[in-house]
Length: 242
Image (cartoon, rainbow, N blue to C red; front, side, top):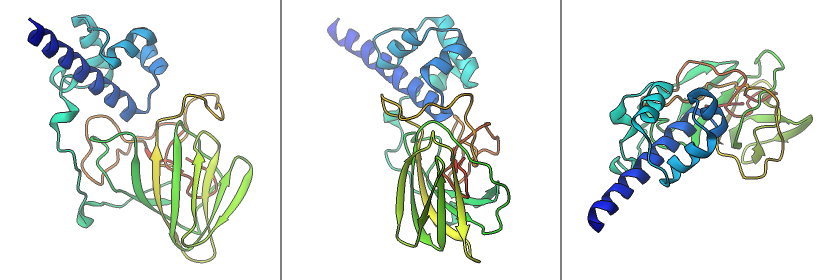
């Protein structure tokens, strides 16, 4: 009997981990998922922790909200390959909002970090600044870059790095006549005590990855308004962001 109970508890924890993975891939808070599903935030939190068993109705509801099959909801993250390799040829470049970017991981596997390579053109148009839940880290590979963040400008050169709260309005701006190339790592997960609260939805320069597992190097073209990538150009927007 104890073995059966242990198996059930393991399955509940696996379901909870998968539920949390899908939610974070979408960039949703528990409150946002509660609004879309009609289930309470407290109930969803207990599901994710494995403390509560989901009813058939709840599972069907969550399947529709995430637009995934029932089998997908019960896939164990632990059963997947623990290492994702992105070959150079698989890092497909895409362009949006004056940024050229290539995802350096698979959005369908790991959700706490979203690494990418971004090129910011000195001819990038507009002055929009982007904001979204989480934080971002950038490292300048080449060129000169200005990070416009929360009303301040930070000039960065090759080898410089910046780590910031992406809920603050931000934008990446290339200085000079050449592109600025950066490594950008975005994390949609925020700390327990937010440094800043933004009203309304997120505004991203680069579309956030969707649940369902895009191919390596591919980020969905859908754009969530207002945003994600990292601050590339004078405001910020990864799924990705700037």
